[in-house]
Length: 118
Image (tube, rainbow, N blue to C red; front, top):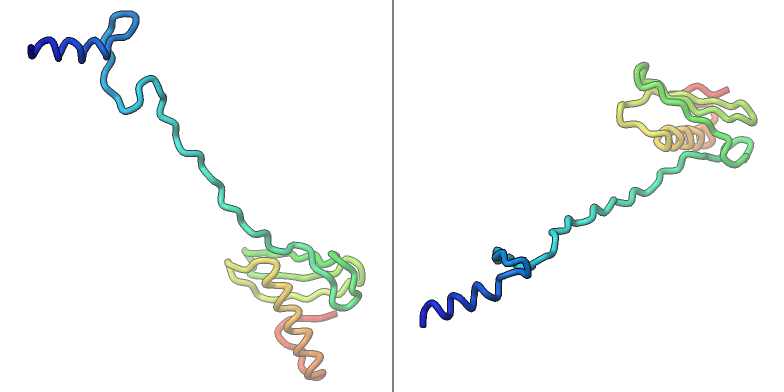
């Protein structure tokens, strides 16, 4: 009686070609790897409007990380401003510093701040 049960168990695992299949959780299915979902990074602004001539997207920002120097320059009216940067500085940081310095200069017309203005 013991062998009869065992034979029927092997019978259910036999393939058409006569080989015995190993027990698996999912027979005949391949393991599929999980698809990698890319994280969506928010884009930081790269085009800025000039606070002096109000042209849209005309500010060119250059970062020289070796010399630790950043510069904002308007391609339309030619106004430029430069400042010292850190290795973590991004173009938007330089532009925001420039806007802050412009606001300080508007409040105190005698103060020029850390950068140079043309």
